[in-house]
Length: 294
Image 1 (cartoon, rainbow, N blue to C red):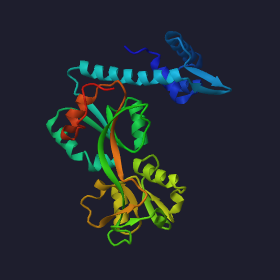
Image 2 (image 1 turned 45 degrees about the vertical axis):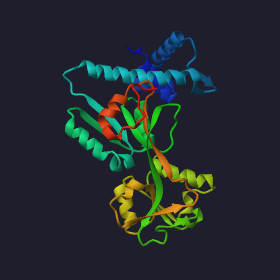
Image 3 (image 1 turned 90 degrees about the vertical axis):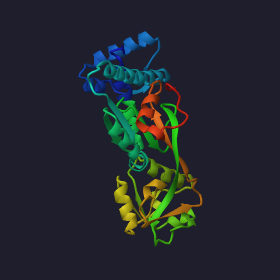
Image 4 (image 1 turned 180 degrees about the horizontal axis):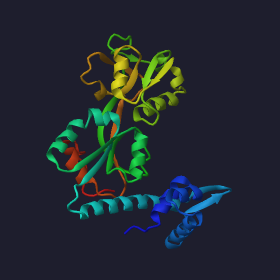
């Protein structure tokens, strides 16, 4: 079973503060220190060091954290499997684009033909990665960039990232230079979302920011964003599936934008989730999945 001190280690790894760790776990600060020293003795290395008054994790601590999260997840799944009378719970995370416009039909089929409990978390990329790290998800389907060294991942889908505007907007159907966006009203997702991150990166690479636009309207629901765009309130950038079935919207393109982007299946390294992915996603399962996980 997992060493009882691992939870203490992970909490300190996240807070980088012995006092806050003790408060979170209802432990005294000396007790936290004792458990960390015990782990350092066990592994034969320093896990945390001070630089002045600032606590830092060592490279060895990063490896222990990766192992610890995987071990806690695997123990959690084992406990659930051993209780045969308990209905299995599957926990999936998706970004809003993927959840609403790519996998909704597959999830509906699974719900109709399975007796498992299904917990679906629809959130932005940053939030989903945090849930994965805290063993709150079995796997996630995300868009945008992430630290691939911290997670296992597979390509899930490719989709085009394009501009969206009202059908009678001057941009409709055109390819425009980035500078043409100046003075436009942008309707965009919240910070931490994959779609917003892509746009901000494209702008930053060319010396711009969202300040290029005359106004920025932020909403965390695509239904609101596309409605605002359809009513002529502004323009947005999103993946092509977002506009499906909305004839009042039109695409436009930036001449500097590589439109093809990846959706990724992401999971904790060392967790054997591929059979679960096949079970839930069916025909949408990535074709290159092998047994186990890396």
